[in-house]
Length: 516
Image (cartoon, rainbow, N blue to C red; front, top):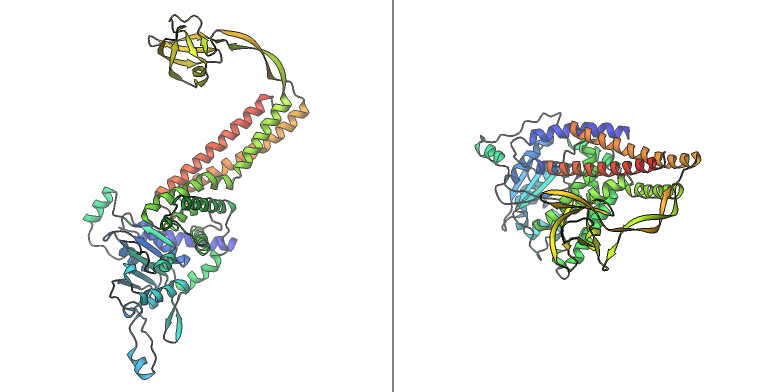
């Protein structure tokens, strides 16, 4: 793993520098560019959905500068497009002299490193069939031979989704990464764009660019990136969300989300590629946010699947990573043992409010005739004060602001001040638990269980702090996630830290209860 780590660390540095150079003056399209680069290294294709004039073609033109000797092929599809315009014209000399039907592929799709197909769904059946083979097998049949297509990145775009019933589902499924590209939202960035001079091509030095051979070498390294259990837990929960959603659509099966086993395999490899390009030897929960770009079928599902993925990571990802369910179980078990070893049942004489007329408690010394409170209302009083009805002996009511102090005391607001009152009470015999002196031997065993819990909780706290520090330094930030996604990671880390702190406080409180 040391060798993998070394290669991955170098790739991260180059990727960050590359994305910074390529993303200059893109204005809110940097995230789409980074996803396009990630897709290219993973050997996958990306589809961009969005209205005209939002920078989709610019992303493709920029991406060619990520590769050494990179050249691009760009084509705007229409219903009259022919295979010659996409895959190259027929070689007249080959046809006339050798009777071979071959295309001249240089400067066309099969001979380009970056390909951008705009309005892809307008392509005719002959183009679709050849394109499907390219997407599936990375080969193009040229005459009587199959040539390997060395396309680093295949990007497509449209302002609409593929029409139903026209045989486009297979091509649609091959675009693993799907992203919605919108107009510029931030006003200052919008002003920067409309007032900027004509955009120039990015200047990228050759030592930063990726070449074909090293990208091919990375493929075997990416396949060795580990998939930890918490990532599998997230995927499992996302699949359950999809299943539940499909069940809710009823007869509207066209709204269903279907993710094949093959697609899930490709998604996991995309996560592996993200981990590798972020300098890691195993997939991190931050990589899992990318799943949301791979499982939606229509724009109205985008926010929904983002919520699924976010909840899965926040509620189940971190919990699985640190076995928080097991920690909670151990804490509950420890609390039960403390209860059994340090307390005994005993008959106790306790003071309890006296019930009047079967449903009221009486407020002693209260000057108003409304000196009764419903027992149910009293039991429902929590922390702080609430507006409740107080009753007279004849059942007449008047609202008062009341707070509960103890099982037999309340405070009532009168003339802008709170006054304390006792409820009419009686002494009752009840079975309760009282603390007993424990032996040093019992203390030792209880302390051992508590210290094991506290040691593990301290370990989690330390790791959370390390993650926070690395993210502040920029080392732990995922270069393929937007700031919105990164803020969700920070939020989930805070939630985990609060949970750990709460468990620590409970453990320490239990330990103090017997003098441990």
